[in-house]
Every structure is written in structure tokens, then in C-alpha cells.
Image (cartoon, rainbow, N blue to C red):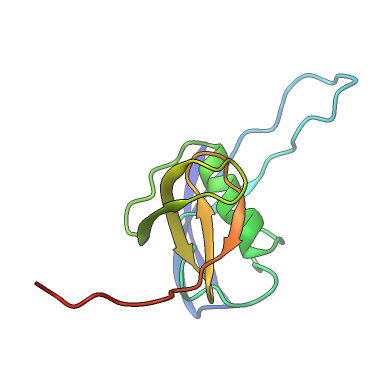
Length: 118
């Protein structure tokens, strides 16, 4: 993977990205081409399409998780994933979005209540 720093037109600041290597073999299976993964995906990503990776924030977060990249700097909460039904860490990003750190499935995050500080 190659690391770069690019200017994101959506959040108007430089962001760190990785470019995954493309598969070198031509096969009958559908193989992924090189993908751009934004390492700064987060709450500021409120649009429907990332201008760097040409994909929705949900897909960008799935790329990040699928490639096993560190989630440093992203907010997480413990919750039950609606897809794999396991108690996991969910990464919060965008406006009310979350993704399972195990299967990468996007979900809507709704905070039902807040508890007082001890």
C-alpha cells in the first residue's frame, strides 16, 4: 500500500490516504482494482460521495475495516451489530452512522439516552 497526503475538497483540509495494490493476476473471479482508502474518514464526512475515493462514506469505512487498518482517532462505542448480532465496537462517522469493526456493515447510530457522570 502506498500512503499519501491529499487535499479533500469535501472537508477543505489535507487528509491521509492509502492506495491498495491492484491484483496482478487476470482471473475469472471479480477481483478488486486498486482502492483509495481515506484514513481521516469521520464525523466531518457528511456528503453522499467521497471526492477522493469516489464512493459513499459507508463504503469508505468498509474498505478501512476490510483491509484491517488501524482505527486510531475514530470514535467507537460498544453495541450489538445489527448484521452479525455480536457485541462489538462500532465506529462512529458521518451524521448518525456507525460501522461494525468485525464485519464492516454500516448502520444508523441513534443515541437513546445519556447517563450521568459518576
